[in-house]
Image (cartoon, rainbow, N blue to C red; front, side):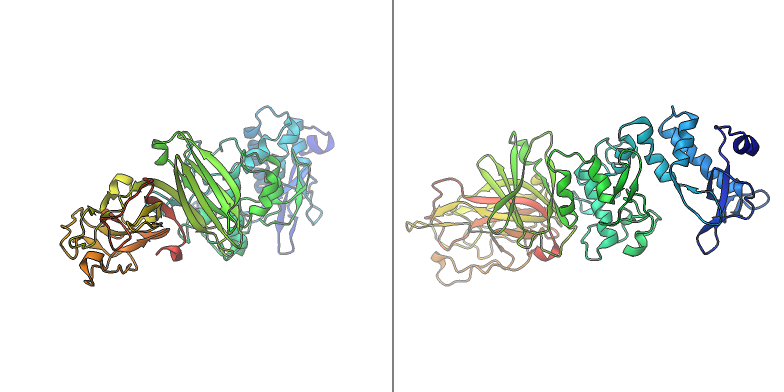
Length: 508
């Protein structure tokens, strides 16, 4: 076979030499005494063996030829209609120089990527960059319904072959890998040992330097993942590119351009889930505003067919605010991103606007006429459970009876029941549960200087608060000392309720 191939030039035979790394880099294995077309690893190869043992280390061309056979099989699996001279060309055109007089070593990655040159197009390049896990985020590590780790690698059920698109979901996964191996300060959510943080997929989450040894996301084939190193990429590109430059070549997203991607390496993700609102509205509009001037940075219309969207925003010193417009209501979530929070995930799920009669209260009001019992929200009806973090924001204005108006004033208290005692009782919410810092209310007007405060309640004013253990209901009240003479002429006074995911230090 060697004579036919080497001496007679029979083209459908490939002769393989073995190379061995003996400490000074790959060199020709002494047993490869005959010249070949290419070389492949042939020293200390873990292989099946005969005898009592199942596996053992072996040397030689028998090991090297198996590498090339496997590569050829992979090429045919990717393109079944290859001709033998095309396979030969792919192998011999994509090699790496080695020492010791050996023929150049095969490069499996380059040979497969170069298939695009043989058959035309960029299908292989797109498959290589189509890396998302099937979630809207592309690399979701926490399940937002129950805040547990999310491990699914094939959420869209495509058997891991990709959805055929290279868009922001793929970029976000690549960016997370990039941050994992380059930034010790990255705030990637999920367990520290989450398998999606195992960039080189060796079943262990290691230091950034160790994860950057043959990592996933090495799109230019140079063996590492970084921002600036370039290497020649055969096939559809045929030029030197960075890892990100390769992804940019096939990137196609309706909301972002490939030119935006370098600025998004240091970014945060803001997921807006408006599914609950879209039960009542045909569409909602989401705006991401750059603070402090409320400059519009990104906008998107959500519909029942696409109720969730992930905004990827570059880190800015001043941060962002999210606004969701549904009918006449405007839901807000502020205080997003700080300069050192690269990679952090936020989530905003606006649920409902609860109209309040400003005469409503859960405080002891003695003989204040015209007052109304507090609004009682049953949490389960909104899909809220203990442990969820809520954004509660008072909206609108109400008249105080003295001719003046106040706005954005409300208060609340969580309870283990829906029991509200009669107005004459001092502590009217027997199931009150502490959820954070108390808002010390002043004595109500008709009770003189008698203390009327409920120690477990809190101010509602763009409030981020965790639902305490045992809570089943939320009591909401206007914020005032005299309730019976209040009025809401516009009918717009109330509280917005949303579920959010934010850094722990923002939770009240």
